[in-house]
Image (cartoon, rainbow, N blue to C red; front, side):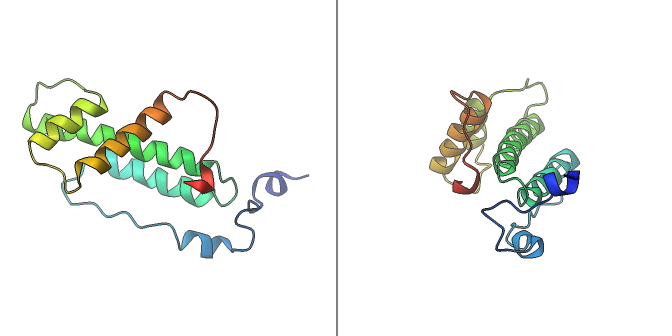
Length: 134
């Protein structure tokens, strides 16, 4: 068996779609011009992981975790815009502080869900994949 045969076959969940059809369902990420390049580059990796999940659906979870961790990184960067001496903080305090500054376009319930997912990926209780179910 070649490496291509081993690693580059569509996962059974997606075998009815071509790679092009599958990738056409990956959402495009849009960023304001003020977004730091580190955040944009991390989301380029997220997009590639989502594309490669055509071959290994478990990469969907890796893409989701990367996106959430990048969101946390971007919140720390943004908080330092308002308070340069602020040290890196964890997700929950960041949500609270940035909400108090009225910097989110989304509701608090969505942010709390992201916090739950961040903790799930950062401190897993067991080995599991949401993959296609997510």
